[in-house]
Length: 274
Image 1 (spheres, rainbow, N blue to C red):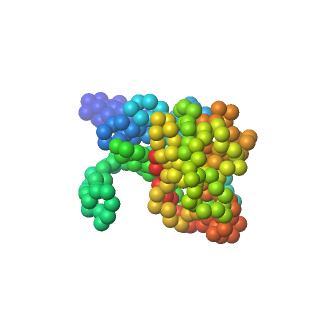
Image 2: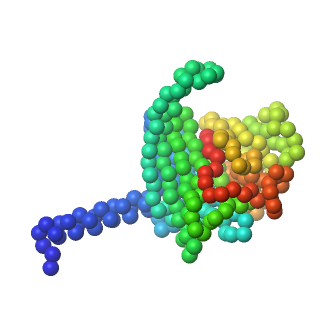
Image 3: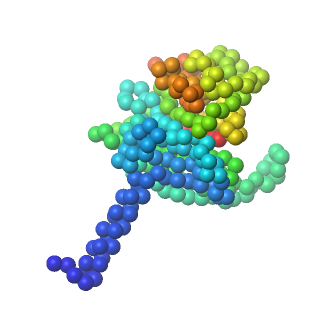
């Protein structure tokens, strides 16, 4: 029977193990350097957090008030189930950056790059255990995230048909946007309407200005990927209150190879920012 120092060491080890396990079941929370913005990641069922695993999702708050409710994250891949609906959060690694650099042109000569960041590692609950990571950054004036598919034996190549990123606003929002087709120019007048006024067939170019109380959705570092467009989703999936819409690449891109999938080796996608 253990006693004395050995027993204390064993109890300390068990306590650390329990704390580590608890850290992975709670939502991963990232705040901006000034504490005003907060983006959280968790696995959910609907709007309820499921510690054991579920749909990968995120939410955003500003000064403690919700801006985005729990919104789904995921990638639709060719020839294999979607990546994101049935995962568990395995670990998270926080980091931060504060640097200043000189711009060649623009409104300011000195640019401060100051943010807090986190990488959320997830693993699929299915037998093959595919992995998906989310890299997120929180600045004082916005948040951003991107998908990363790590190199892994079960995924030698990634063929993206579409993505299942959602934006579920906490209040009924007004939009200022450009709604165009696949074959039309990205330059046009901005039109104002509510999210509830989006038709399922609309294709919405980024950026989109959203008044709740005032944010902009856009993408950065566009590489190896077709242009993103927003839509309210197909009719069966559309919420009756009109608070949500989804981001996708579009299945009919002319420059997508093969069967319409976007092919690239495991790695990082572009940033989605708001």
